[in-house]
Length: 163
Image (cartoon, rainbow, N blue to C red; front, side, top):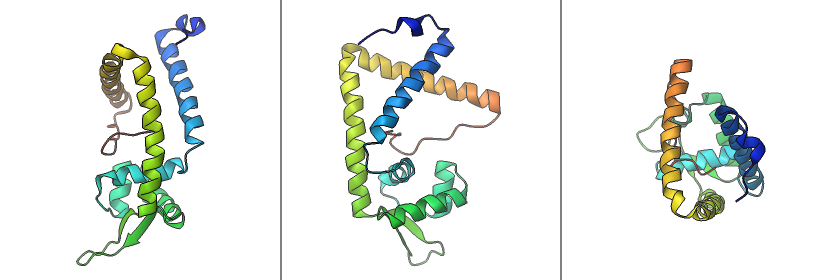
């Protein structure tokens, strides 16, 4: 692993921003080879718990406007990744993944998780402490963001976020 002397001379906040930007660029490049768009992946990740949801439940879970969710769900339905259905006794229609959507989600997620696993393996014995520190950092950042904005941070879908 190469050290970046230029980045090490930066203040720690700017160094973190530079590293996260670099990570984001790499993740974006990997996402370009995936079969699902980011919105579809986010939707399917939400459904990875196996529970169908209404549009309102999806919007609440993803903290998005219902009109945005409606547009994304309609796109995923047209692509064959999600389907709508009616359940007896419910007035709102439910949304759930199709078998093809589940398969594509599994394929795309497997790629991302494999790359994360390889990178963690390259860290050797430092992999676990890195994850523990990252977990603490994410919690600390959420607290700082809540204090700065007066809002609570969005909870991640069950199982975290692969991308």
